[in-house]
Image (tube, rainbow over all chains, first blue to last red; front, side, top):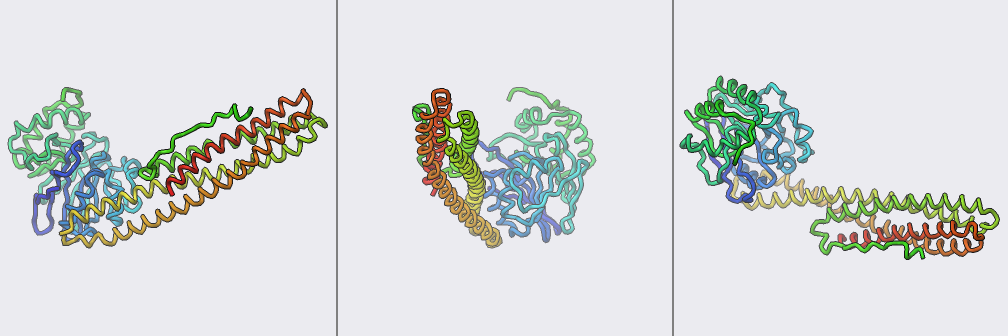
Length: 245
Length: 214
């Protein structure tokens, strides 16, 4: 599991974990993100059971276990949060922030110790020391209860499955040629995203934010002008289609 | 003749159930659930025996006391089957928790290996100790519940030996009841023996499974 520092200032740091060469081949590669502040760490979409030991090993190289006070699950999928039963043992005092509609479903992964903070449909925010993170609604993209995390100070949007691409786990970290990247994400967005209306509402919401990095849960990160290119491309894309792979 | 009617189900015991012992525990629970249902049939047989004996009157005078024994056997079997069934269900639940606890330890062992150089690795010591304690507690519970289950299975198995004697005595008494009631009373004897044999088959299977788990 590789670790990359995406952003750092006096208040906080953004780390990205991914490109795990030891993961089983049939498992989709995923990006995990963590915001570290003075006394807290906020781990986003910590991943599936198969990734747990690699993830905890990577995370523990950065911060002590007791500092990871918050987990976030953008939605209920197994690649997002099926490791919960193990995190529950590793971080018994942590809080999991996730859409309210998934609480009784996510608890099936095993949750005896961790506290569930249900995020309302309209979103919300969390302050970690001096850093404010916002939960931006991204419902039906693709999950019916789904949030992104936005950091206005770092200008980073953790976009979950939006912007995801299916490619090898040796892929570069950042999109370097947008046009060449499009084929890697087109089918994913058309097949996984069910609603054009939800997509366009999300784009309108996101265009109002200042974003330097758009960080999906699979594939590469969009940086600078590629963020706008992605939003334009996504806006023009018809989703909710079953097409060829 | 009753023994010819009873199909003794020969089931294959997994050779290495310890590999997936929680599946074995669930299988035992399912088997003993079937035993409970058969025990309830035995209870119906007891009621039927009493009714036939009453109708037969003096001709079945020797049979009547036997219905009390059939009743008692049915009652003991139902109570014991229910208890065993509950024990097996608890064991199954404990086994599933034990699998999870064992897996957690395996994951932690990997983390300790992968992050041995981390300056923060010691921060996992406390939660790891808690997980180990939980695992040990579940191990203890698992062994204890397995022992209890084994003991109860043996007890019920002993009780069911009486069913053969009861069936034989019932057949002897049935032969004195006259042609009108003879068949019905022999049928009662067959049912007692048949139900007991079926339950014994399930118990034997469960005992074999339990022995591979111990």
